[in-house]
Image (cartoon, rainbow, N blue to C red; front, side, top):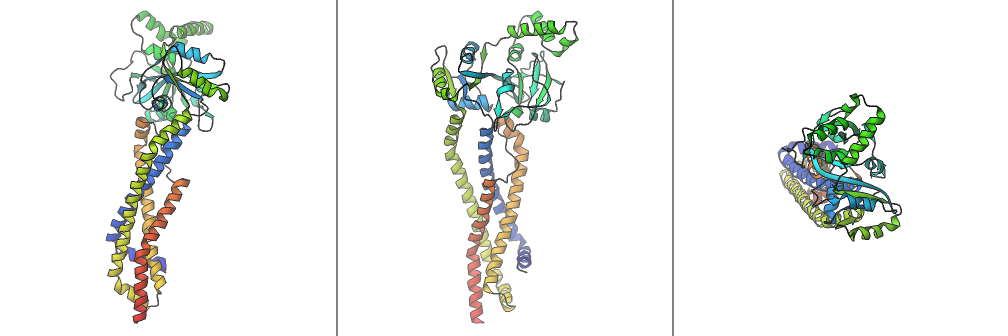
Length: 432
């Protein structure tokens, strides 16, 4: 009876209730959105890379190095020489080293030049290694391996050809049209920037920037692509040509590289040696430490956004409370009739509280739905522009606690008109 009465009462005042729902929905959308994006951003960044002891690049800020090398955000300030990379990688204390070359793109998606070691040693999340959904890793110059989201959004499949462009702009006029690449592999989804990257060999990066000798370029295309399999050469001859070709395309510079050490006890020692490298100015960072620095810098902004969101929600709650309070004055005759048929003051108190609860629940449903719809629309932009993968599921442990707090706060604020209604009904009982 109490629930039916509360629902009918809300329907009778649908105009004012609709305005209150709009205000509550917007405030919950903002509050839940800030908390969800904040939580998902930290989780996305933390899961992007694991098992990497050091990230090394040309000397710059530690955050800048982390962002452009791992998260593909921003641009490198400078490159480092291949000789420096080899010197550090050949150290007996280094277990593995994965070079990276950045600076090219395809339709807004970044291109990563690397080696076979990338697919062997790079891991994300809880030490999860990259796996192939289709195909294999590159083994010829003009082979390309796509991240899952690249293949999905652009509709590529194995055997398709594509052209890379210089720079990272979505609409580039500097296309390498004379050197098309063939899709040989598609990676399984990872929920990291890997999904939005194209992977080619370091030799491919060198090859697409070659100019001049037309005979050599013709040889490069025939040997470094899948059309070479149509020639009369034996497998051994093709392999020999391929190795010779890769040797000629040895890169002179790279953007950065990741290091895995034989023992983590030597991490700070190797870091200090790299930071004091004599051949050229380099910087080695610990990904976890750099991330902690990033979150420390962002904490002020996070707290400010949460405070503003909380104030918006409080103002919306006060608006609902004011609406319920004014409705009590309009419902004087209704309250008197309820008292005449035997409704107790506590019954009326619970009626007002239940109305506030219904408003809060409907607002939560609308706010969460609006947030998921907004994330669905903006997801591709967030990934391509900011490298952030934000889940559409806004219901996590932290968000559920937040929603519970919203419901409790709504009930507490609604106690003001509920208590007034209780006192009025009690005084009416005395006068009766």
